[in-house]
Amino acid sequence: MTITIALSKGRIFDETLPLLAAAGIVPAENPESSRKLIIGTNRSDVSLVIVRASDVPTYVQYGAADIGIAGKDVLIEHGGAGLYQPLDLNIARCRMCVAAPLGFDYANAVKQGARLRIATKYVLTARDHFAAKGVHVDLIKLYGSMELAPLVGLADAIVDLVSSGSTLKANNLIEVEEIMPISSRLVVNQAALKVKHDLLQPVIDAFKKAVK
Ligand code: ATP
Ligand code: MG
Image (cartoon, rainbow, N blue to C red):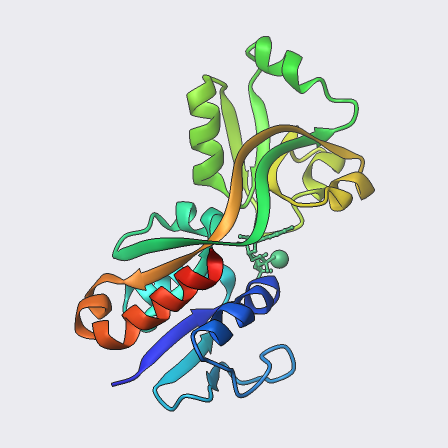
């Protein structure tokens, strides 16, 4: 029996390397420089698949990967069906927030009951956030570069991930409200956890120990 781990390139891969090492798993190649999408490891029974961050839950849900690592942002939008989420790995930390142009009086617009135009990749998160506040919004779905939307009149504000805030600052935007803290979680296919328990549980346990 073998196990497959779904990971995305970039910060999640980088921050997952020490966790993999703690489980005795060392990738045979660096996905940043390799064009391969299936990467072997030092263990013949463990392989990695490199997928887009927002696709990790889908690969694990359908059992194409047994486990994966995905941001809470991505898991909320996916919905989490078929996924066991045993562990917050505390990596790729940032926050989901509302950001608006420097001159926009967000607090007043919310208080006045104005209808806000919000551009975001995270439409479910944004919908729930504003619904809970009783703020009426028109949501505009984007796939990236959300910071541009308020600058060209596409939206009043955006819902996006922020860590240092330097991208917001470079585009004359400020964080006006934090929605929730975000970090990445381990996700496990529920059927695989039963069938491949002897292979998966030690990996989960090693991650758990490495996180503490
Ligand atoms: P793509 O670039 O392929 O469209 P993506 O933008 O979702 O995908 P990344 O930017 O690498 O991919 O983000 C992957 C995950 O890392 C996100 O789902 C989120 O959980 C986390 N993340 C995103 N931005 C930051 C940030 N600024 N700081 C820390 N973690 C972040
Ligand atoms: Mg990105």
